[in-house]
Length: 359
Ligand SMILES: NC(=O)c1ccc[n+]([C@@H]2O[C@H](COP(=O)([O-])OP(=O)(O)OC[C@H]3O[C@@H](n4cnc5c(N)ncnc54)[C@H](O)[C@@H]3O)[C@@H](O)[C@H]2O)c1
Ligand SMILES: [Zn+2]
Ligand SMILES: [Zn+2]
Image 1 (cartoon, helix red, strand yellow):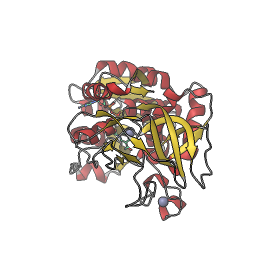
Image 2 (cartoon, helix red, strand yellow; image 1 turned 60 degrees about the vertical axis):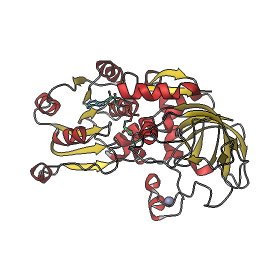
Image 3 (tube, protein in one colour; image 1 turned 135 degrees about the vertical axis):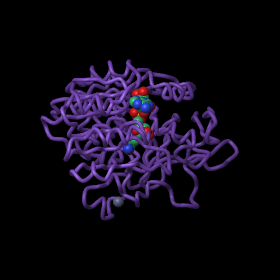
Image 4 (cartoon, helix red, strand yellow; image 1 turned 90 degrees about the horizontal axis):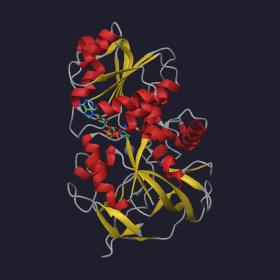
């Protein structure tokens, strides 16, 4: 099967023909229909977030179950599925208390030393990232890395539920659990940030301020529900504090940069909460003023929207079907697997919301 392979971090992905094994116990072979290109894939491809090589990236996938191994109970051949990097063990303290997205046991990869799921033409093991590998025609995963969805959901739009939607919506609804009537600011309106805006609207925010350096993104944010937009040219903190007469109740950073995380924290009113969704390069630390913190401002991370994806994703599909989740506007471009490096280049300029590879 054809796949885009990361052979060397910092180099373009290479289209190659890989072998994929048969499903073992608890494994599911998926015929990939669509995979979105997330900035986290670019972080891994360019090395700012380390990944083992060779690897197939791509973690925002929807497809159809082609085969299942022994003991698979949650999906069957022919089911439409969405995948998630939040594979979970189901038994640890975090899983049992409802925090499966931070499960550290996972167990979604094959045990060390077993036959690899994927190999190169030379027979070398190809790594998956987060137990997935969506930049490929087929993907062999653990059953705890996917969930079945209703079959009338278009698969190209379902793919983005795999990461951008789950992450953005979950950051608002699960991690920050914003209150209706509150004021929200979002710095960075890419795939994830636009979904934060959309979720803030669904969750009843009274005012949603979208901030980006690209004007086209601000227009998209308005379509997603932003009530105000700020072009990130001048002092965005001063602008937001002035607009809101003292700062926002909730801010979200969806880029992954030290200066914008610090801006997001500084635009909070006393008692406000800043949720950092962007992944800054490994080793980054943030300067947070002691006096800002004293007045009960909070800074928190959010990993994959603190999801419970087997429950959340089918609900997100329903929200799309009801017209509340604006996925048609999020998916700006459908591309072929061969164009994946182009999609990475576009992520660097920030002109598009989401590119989705369709097979
Ligand atoms: N926490 C998680 O679980 C999780 C999950 C998915 C993605 N992420 C991370 O979220 C971040 C966003 O991902 P994405 O796919 O939406 O990325 P993206 O590239 O589509 O969006 C980033 C946006 O930020 C804007 N931007 C860049 N620099 C800016 C600046 N200085 N000021 C204002 N705007 C600026 C760009 O114009 C773009 O619209 C990435 O760091 C990604 O790794 C985190
Ligand atoms: Zn992602
Ligand atoms: Zn667990």
